[in-house]
Length: 474
Image (cartoon, helix red, strand yellow):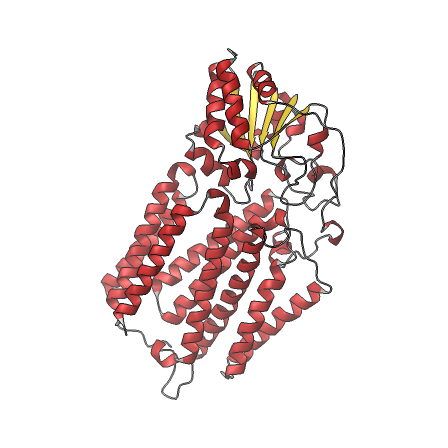
């Protein structure tokens, strides 16, 4: 067993308080209204855990440790201030990759010098239970790292969001996973270097192979799943280090990420097993997405949109990634305020993965001080589109695409979408007719008789509509 120092009750209490703060942080992050408070709880919990660990352990070189913490803090502050909300999904993926890489680094350090970690006997043989923790930690960490790198590249546009289907991919994936598990089992009887490093190398490989076949439409689930993996990797390394805070934190992150992934899969009508198995069962015929057709569509202007919405009784606004890119949420709220002054009933419809990340649109609308009671999730508002006078879609494509309900060859088939096509009039704000959504498929709503396309930058269009509403006397 690990040769741990005698347990100090104050240390145990500090780690317990830290764990409670992490739980409160997760609870707070469940709603934009309490997200700021949740972040503060998380920061406080992490500060308690880090300080407790530093105080209760003898540091070989305090200057190096404190210097590393300072460098990481500066990088984190700079990134938090400079990163736009539109880049948040890929930033989360990048952070997951760092957690995975840290787990691999800890496992490698423990393997190379087990005596320093108190996980070896006097002959240098690593304890059996520590080999299990080390094998699982390095495997999950390596998978998290390489999978997160692919997710980052896809989300950032450096790699196509279309699924990349390798021949015999299921056989290769299953064989690689079986080899990793077999080698972890063998590692219990033989701690030779080739076994440990082969486990590490194969785990890096399978991370790439599992994420490459998953298309852009399912990428939000992948990010959530990788979040879960990073938690389990941290928990495994917590056992290796004998650190209670890491075990608690890792278990919280791992379990909450797994639950969120399952909830998102249900919300998107996706198979949880299919996603975590690297798109197992995906239809290769739809990997490239549908080709964009040249079809007639109806152009409109800000003045047209202002007139139609001012004459409406009910308007439902559907924000998407295009709104986030243009930072149009403040102009959108101003537009809604003017409509409400004219007696128009305004609501916001949010898809679970609008903006490529759960809660992305909710946060942006909260930032613009949109009242929470006007914001509704898909399942709570979808049946209202049929009685809606105007559906105002601003930068959302895939989450409003009826092909998800009708086209079995579409990569988004089966995903619940917002039924904007049932509204009497659809105003669709889009930068141009040349682009398609993240899943790479065209949207039939663009070409419907009741749809008016408002082409241009989302913020400028919203500003122009505000000017039209303010100056026309509607």
